[in-house]
Image (cartoon, rainbow, N blue to C red; front, side, top):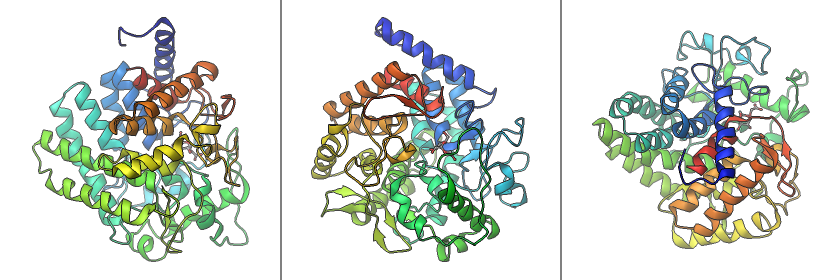
Length: 427
Ligand code: 9YW
């Protein structure tokens, strides 16, 4: 803990550290004790950032434990299931994914068959910068390189430089209005039915049936690259996922140097992703980034928090940075929310202040924008994000998400990334 914290900040720091301690399973951090008791991929990356401030030994174990779930083709799954938990602890559990029947999946640990935003190399580099540990860098570099190789070889569906998600869950922003069109275009078999899940059911009904349908299509084709490229009905290039990929590709080049490997291929890839982000996802007519639906061959209409993801690109041209800042501060986002940043354009008909990723403010997306703003030397934006994020947790605790107008807490309590990222913000 930094010695320059005020008394109030010290109390917040300690409360956040207690949440991480309580959610530590002995090998990893449960995303949220009651709702999401397993290890989720991008949650784990965020948890490691907080643990780096509190228990650096655990931060490294957190990442290594996630990579126990990595498949032989490099795919890093979005859930690594805790085998000590009852199989009813979370739906969909291991039985939906059947990783134990996939030759590429690891033995002795069950996982999902999807990915999540690849922030891990960025986080591994930050751990190294906070407490240099060449042995750890050398150990994790090949795993990260394999993760990135999988993304470049299997997920760059149109050889554009960008990676595609094949399920809304892969975006991390599950029910974002950005996915409404491609999800709505999905045909459901007449008997589609998804069992009720856990203590809460969000999102519900037909949306959920569609999520499960997409998983069964992937599973029943053995998660094959050919199915993904040719026939899978959901394939989207998302600006936030690709910005995370780009930031991590830059970090991977630095980690390669630390580990004594060749950084050049990662630098070349980063240059390609940067160009493709601008060519394919920047919409000059509306002055923002949008997700591209590869199956329909067009940009998706709703402007969401994903539009700000490319602030993670260190080479984003200054006029585009300015356009993003104007949009962020406008009445469509921070300008009309007491507790920014809402996850959907407030003026969109799809905006829903209580609807999970359809409007509420989340600590993870706030942290990503804060981090990008710092990198671009935008102190006004960074201070706004820092202040509003701390106000949220002071007022409502380490909740899963928050009402963007009055800051009231929603969803699960003691959410790991809400605590971890506050630790990182406080420094
Ligand atoms: C689900 C764990 C996960 C996050 C996702 C979030 C939610 C789980 O919880 O998804 O299937 O409902 O949308 O980003 O990783 O915190």
